[in-house]
Length: 292
Image (cartoon, rainbow, N blue to C red):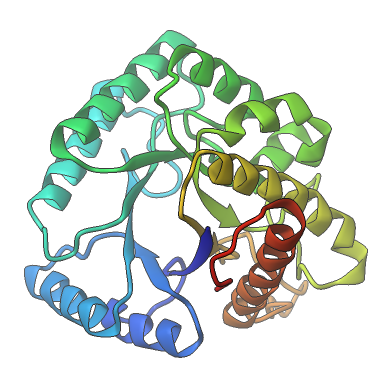
């Protein structure tokens, strides 16, 4: 099994083709982003990704951006997902290896959440797309226990694991919930590698010594996901370092100067997890393939 690292487009004000080139130069294997609205921009992105040999992960948000519109109906969420999936299927030149969905609403009754997820799974399967739902605050899979119950009800549910969100919701690190981490491991297709802590979804810098216990907690969980993927015979695992702006990045009071550079932080995270993955592979598997 080999690891592919993806560069996030979140918070980066740069045309996606230019970002893809910069990410490639920085050592990333692929790009994760929403689909461009403009047809010419989609064509240009597809051409650059093909030129660079970079895979693409498509990001979809239902009923709004990262935080959904509170008043949007379950049908509005389902319609948004259907439209996005159909648009993706109609754009074969981009050919994402995965569609990552930030979908649903945390306030729904669980039967509504289950129906939304079930319909999304069926929609993607009908179009031949690989769909995973992200464990994200304000969304359907906003905490470990709802997610565990959805997995029990929907064994076919696939996940993008961003457990930093759960640290905030639960006000603790997720190695304190070993049963849920073990249950979800076989369902994780993709990892968002951001390090949260008990009072926030993003530490100021994952290299800081005062947050090493938070990094170690997340890495412990990520390694369990790799182990499950390896056991399932997967040949690739994908990971996107996803430290971002918009209230996530810590700012100095009064001056509001960022305490770190997001590009550098995400690059550090990518390099650190490549090394972590190699160590894990040597310690826990008998792979004979060349380490990437």
